[in-house]
Image 1 (cartoon, helix red, strand yellow):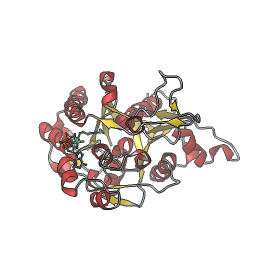
Image 2 (cartoon, protein in one colour; image 1 turned 180 degrees about the vertical axis):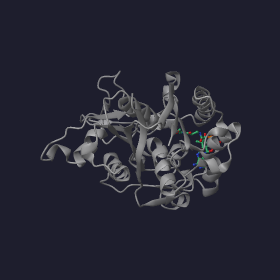
Image 3 (spheres, protein in one colour; image 1 turned 45 degrees about the vertical axis):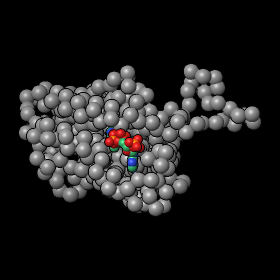
Image 4 (cartoon, helix red, strand yellow; image 1 turned 135 degrees about the vertical axis):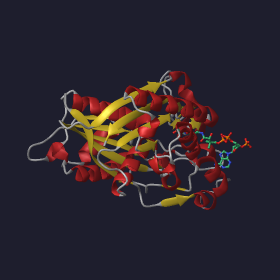
Length: 343
Ligand code: UT7
């Protein structure tokens, strides 16, 4: 059985920076820089321009990851695209991104399979477990795994929606997961879900238990009330469960490998809230230099947070071959996951 390792990392964030003060001054949200920073650690986020969708953000990150792996799209056997903000209800953003690579128009067309993963903040780790398993099974040599979000299109950037909208930003990260005979790469992943809390962090938009799935007005046009159109979140419940589940998941992967948290060289947290991550870090007794953050600059980019962090850490020279790297995430579903990789 080959090992599966991350052979390339990449990321893309749109150029427009939206600071906390911009939320107040440009969007008229009754909030403050102090409130947001104190509760979450977020100072700014990026918003993609009109006309740019999630697949396009993913495409930019994917090109970066391929270049970093020294591969071209023709080397890729499968695309896994993790997002909670897909361009359309269907088809998935994976096929839209595949189309941007024009692989079906090559002299020798390549119809790379594309799988969308819908596991929100844990999407990248669900995708990493899937991609690694595909590689370890021998079914694929190289899998392109993307986490991308265009949140700004579906945020209620008003005082009514401030609890959610002040947290999220746009961005994309990508990795290539490749086969190797070397003794490195994925050591252990764990995933979990607790569907009892499905509606505690949820954006319904429609409801297929009703016919039609969206209420129609007298002219036959769909009406989506704000409580369905935008995400709702029970922030305190998410906070409490995130802390609990992330600690358990990290202990699980460490004990499986016979190591303690102190043996981790770098820990990459999903970037939802700086306070959640600091609490978990303290419980595990990890020093600051082993933990990377970028929530201050990008906010919560959901499926993209961990791959953006990996790419930034690699470019900064902080992530080096041989390091023991842990990743952990928690989010809507509730879903969670953790992974331990020898870089
Ligand atoms: O990837 C997973 C995604 N989500 C998370 O991980 C989120 C986890 N939870 C959290 O990070 C925190 O619960 C929040 C940062 C979202 C909220 O902090 P909180 O201390 O739990 O605040 P709260 O929701 O209980 O709201 C307290 C007050 C409310 O006002 P009233 O009702 O007490 O008058 C809110 O309306 O803070 C108000 N508030 C705000 N005020 C200024 C909520 N959002 C804002 C805001 N600016 N952006």
